[in-house]
Image (cartoon, rainbow, N blue to C red):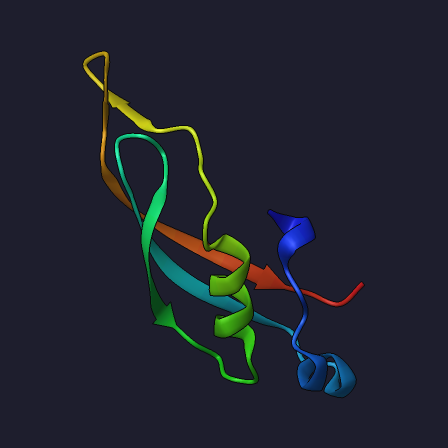
Length: 81
């Protein structure tokens, strides 16, 4: 997933770091069906985080031996090295 993140160009130029908080709706097959932005620091960070996660599939949640759908809060941290 990290390789899919594109740092917003204006934020990079200005040296801005931020954290975007997302809520992911993941189905019982592990596909991310919906992404909701909970905290957007601006400067294009939220758009970059959502774009990086769109279309990804993850390991599905498991309850009592069966895959299940979940909501998951996920922070995406943008830092300059």
